[in-house]
Structure formats: C-alpha cells, structure tokens
Image 1 (spheres, rainbow, N blue to C red):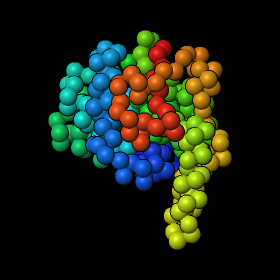
Image 2: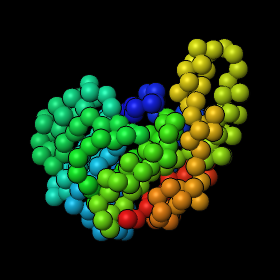
Image 3: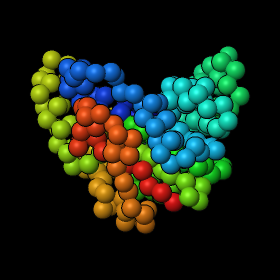
Image 4: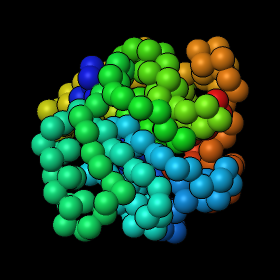
Length: 228
C-alpha cells in the first residue's frame, strides 16, 4: 500500500508494535472479522471503499461474505491495483473492483456508505487534508473508519527505533524515512483535533466492535469511526 506523499509500508502496529504482537497470545489481527462486526452494528452498507488497500485481504474476504455490497479498493500503486483486479476476476467477485487513488488528495468519483482507511495515515504528511478528502467520500449518514498516529504512537516508535541498535543501519534508516511524518510529529492526531478538522465527533472503533485486548488495540494505535 502506498499513498501520495508517503512511502510503502505496513501499518504502525505491524512495525513498531511488532515485538509485542509476535509475543502475544491469540489470533493475528482479525481485520475483516472486526469490520464485519461493524457492519452488524451500523447496518449493512450498500457500498464500501477501502483506501490504501494494498493486497486488499479485507476487501476479498468481505466481498465473498457480502455479495450484495459493492466493494471498491483504492491504492496508489498501479501494479497492485492490476494484480487485485486479476485476482477478483479469478475469484468471480463481481461486487469487487479496484482503481488507482491516493491520499491526501484522493481524486476519485462517488461516495460510499463506509470509507475504510487502515494503516495509511501514518505515512501522510498533510494528514488533515487526507482526513477531509476521506470524509468527503462518505455518503450522507455513512461512516468513516480509520486508525491514526497519536502522541503515544510517536513515543513508542521513537523508543522502538532507539532499541534496535546499529546492526541494521540501512533498515533503521528505511524505517525512519517511512515513519518520518510520525517521528516529526507532522501527522500526530487526537480525538479533539479530528473533531475540529471534520466537524464531527470520533468514536472508538475498537469499543464499537468489542475488539479483544491485544497489542493492536493498545492506546498507541487508536482506531475511530466518524458518522456523517
């Protein structure tokens, strides 16, 4: 997954919280199952957009479960989009399509009952413009779901990189470049700032879906939903 003004990479929890996640008990991050729970909480949406979808495992999983929902995945990398299209055709998922699109601008057509953006805002410098672009794509009475870096994310990432030593200097430099917006504090957000930017109150997504207590639900990886 990649977005304009970002570098390739996984979500923060998969990198900075990797050691905690690997040592934790329980299943790996059940991203599709949690979004499925959210569907049941808010009512089944007619359309879903996943922004920064990468290989789109969530889209493929849920499109198979919900053949009446239209799913659309967006990624900045054309090769990723092409590969996803080919796989969707092979799977016979007529309700799943893909297109090139990237934050912070997200120059795409249409509005969706649910816009989902997990693991992308961490790499965007102009995070407030990205938030507005995502929210603009939400249909009236729809929801935006996203995770984001906060001050705890920044502190944890700094500690994590500092503890890695100098044995893998090139890897460290790559991580620092990848997470430069977080390390610089350029895209660090809070509930209050999100509410100011979007003019709507964010609510905890983890609480809404009764997510288990796992490293990926820690306070340094907040995930929220915002109704329109």
